[in-house]
Length: 497
Image (cartoon, rainbow, N blue to C red):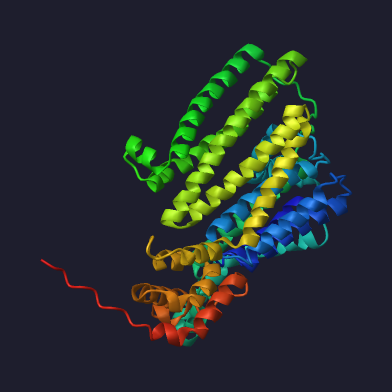
């Protein structure tokens, strides 16, 4: 009952707060409320949680605060993913399970279990775990049930008499019509969102605190295929990587002339066409190596030594592949400028480089228990670094610093970024070309002032979805409003011929 009541309270809070979009302060407040609810349930029932639980709660609150600081849509998506991962890990910690020393696949399994519990856990909670027959029937509860029954009995009588009185007196009819004017679509919307957030939170706490399941075993028996199939698979993958690396070294040491003669592409186009494929290939190597290590975890020392040698060779070849990918990105950005996709793909490559280095230090030396937790911490460190880097502002600064003769500054794309890009764009407004000034001024006024879009755009967020970056952007645009409104737009050239 306490889990269900907590879910109802959080459901009402979620409907009241998260209805205002884009999310800002409301997401932070809901994260704090979720952490506080978990702490209250744990304290009230004296549940022995894992020692990582307080750190997970603080990390979740820190991630939630980012919704009120940055305005990048991509960062908000990554923060939401980070919160989902933290909640999955908290499901283990609330059961008293230590996070360190766990297999990476146990983290994946905990995420699946937490997601299924959140979506479907409310049904076993209400149908099986709450014994409704044991609830008290006397006192205030009995009077409340009696009052509800009386109201139901009186409803048809009130309806009949009210209809007669309304027909007899127009003033009474107007009073009743005003009092009973209800927007049923709004009521249905509030009820649906409240029910959704209630079911999600109550189901999550059911899975973390009530669900009957043994804790994950630290020394689970691993499936073993033997060194021959696993070693053959690793050897073939190493051979493929080796062929690719040889070709890459030839082209990158050969320079632009060799690339253009062999592929009929410019050096920048050659870099552009391969980066994201190399990112995907690099990302697939990690689960492949983890799977190979798990399949031979119980093998003999000789077989494990062979596995580590083959894995080490693959990591060395992968290092060349990742260096090639980063070199392609450097050429790509130098030619076409920086964008969100390019920046976040590069950040993912940096994370992979750290994860592979950690894999070599831990798994290849037989300390596989240390890998998963360290790789997880590295992921959150990269996410924190992105917040400190302020991606949208960095994109604008990088593209403004490029010589215009290489590629003109894209003012339309710059104004489509989040509010963090606005101060840097306004600071460099005087250096833009006439056409870029026109486009930037129109976009900034339309997006960040109420009068710029016919009064349809709100002047500011409400208190629920307040965001620091958006507040600064609106203030900066307001301070430069006179300059932006006075920006002339050059007439378009008439078509020739």
